[in-house]
Amino acid sequence: MKRISAIVRPEKLEPLKEALFAASISGMTITQVMGCGNQHGWSEYFRGTEVLLNMIPKVKFELIVTDETVDGIVELICKTAATGEVGDGKIFISPVEEVVRIRTREHGEAAI
Image (tube, rainbow, N blue to C red; front, side, top):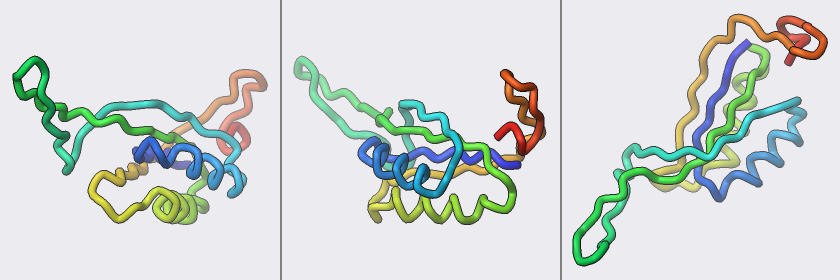
């Protein structure tokens, strides 16, 4: 099992959520986050003083998927979230040792 964490533009929230549900993803966690990468934010003026705003609003999708579906999900996220501009986001993939469904106490892939 793998955890896919995708950090994308806020305007891609609904299109990506719909695409993942259409791909039969059984569940996901979505969080509003702030961060910076190559964009490095922008400058604004507040009371005559320049202020660097380097934390940019993003949306983080977290999914736990089987090893066999990782490549297809990553491709789907890239296709749906890409604009071709700096700031499209990143995808992080990491192993998941175990999953337990609290209600039924199922373990492993059965709990996804």
